[in-house]
Image (tube, rainbow, N blue to C red):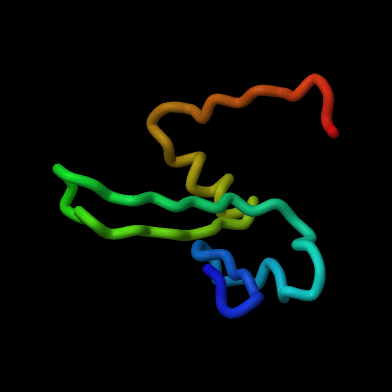
Length: 74
């Protein structure tokens, strides 16, 4: 969630970035535009999660997240 230049985790509400330079941690940012055949047709949903909230939610998935290690990290 963004408020002006600040960024907050939608899961726990913690401030991730205050707009004063780069964020100090990685954040999962999601934007979904819902289309036909959904109950949210025409809506755009946006949210972000800190790493802790992402891990908490991921543990509840029925199927595991596909994870790949990068060979070179730039």
